[in-house]
Amino acid sequence: MSREYPDMCVDEHQLFGTLTGLTSGLLLSSLAVNNHKMERYPYRKLIVPFGELRSEKTFNIDHQTVIIQRSSSVSFLHQYFVFILNDRLKILQSIDSSTGWLYLAFLHTMTSHPLPDQYTGMTGMERAFQLLHSAGCWSDQPFDFLSLNILSQIADISPKVDYYPEHLTRMAKIDWNNNGIPYSMQHFGYYLIAKQLIETTQQLGFMYSSSI
Image (cartoon, rainbow, N blue to C red; front, side, top):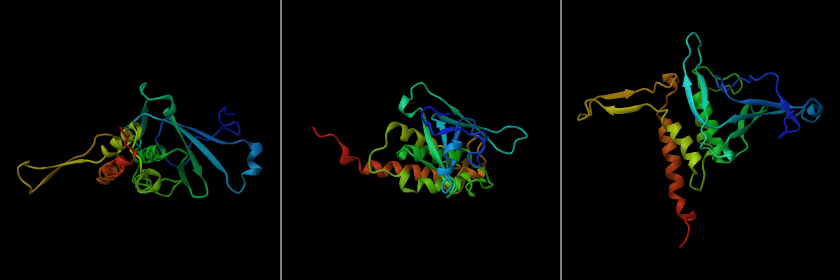
């Protein structure tokens, strides 16, 4: 039984058909005594710690492994995020502010595979872009340090493109990230949407500037 969620317990089956390869996380399900209340709308909760995500490609395994590297500089308030598994819509949802939605999109990005996830019916990349374009990730307030950190990590997934040779514009050189994510999942759109999210909040930042 969970102390913070007294009506839930650790699920016996920690695999749930999405975020495949993620090595850190705890899946909770409702207690048996509450099942009769949840017959029409069962739900589970996934607790995932915050940190820098690193992907590794393991030999003889078709899917990358995603490791969360913790940092002692992260405040206790954001040590972890809680997501709800909406079994009706077959999606994960954040219960936090835009920071939680951004982190969920980042998790889908790092665990993405060319084949769709069993739970969502979409690839991690498809679900990530769906989230990044949703209202949950957009804010009319300036992003805090944690949100900017997540957006920076998302932007870094996009490959880097330079002219080759640099003084000409006839050819381009693409440097793919050696981060364990399949090349087909390293979309240029990650950088563009992260840049747009940051610029939008900066344009509205004047409404929250402190007056002297």
